Length: 208
Image 1 (cartoon, rainbow, N blue to C red):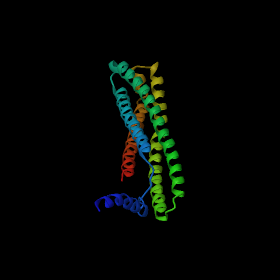
Image 2 (image 1 turned 180 degrees about the vertical axis):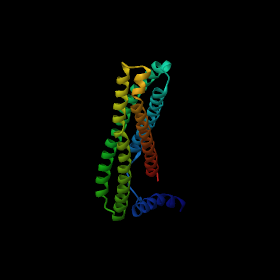
Image 3 (image 1 turned 135 degrees about the vertical axis):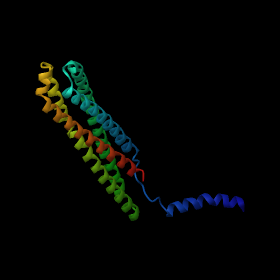
Image 4 (image 1 turned 135 degrees about the horizontal axis):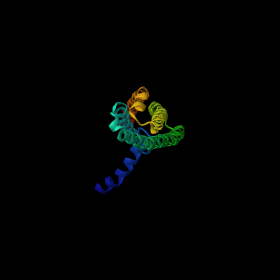
């Protein structure tokens, strides 16, 4: 009798699984989560880099003539590092978009061929919610990335302008521009931090 039960048990399990399908067939979101996490780190690195650049711009705008050369050299170095951070940021955001487009397209195809109406509805609802969260995330990422180029252009303009006029009067003449640049960098850093928070929220949402 025990042997008969042991043989029947696997069949009973298969029967239960057939009549009680899984509640979802959601795709593996790990590749997208990994790309968002990579973009988040690129945003964090960019925020730190631009914050450092802001400090040097402020130091340059307010430093004494004896420190001008050192402050200028530091500002030039920060500009170069900021350019590299911007390139990495844009590349990471593009990676998120490419991965998401492929994943959502495949998810939609797999959802449409489901024969269980409740299962299909559940998957469609989850797809719609994830897509909506993703769109909000991309808007935040693109908004912050759009502020990068103008800041880099202004930073470069000030570096070039001071290159041949690195003296107290030259710096004083550009103090208004330097202060405005420092303010713009601060706004960029704030936007990057907001996008980082949005990335955290998106990752957390995919794990629910």
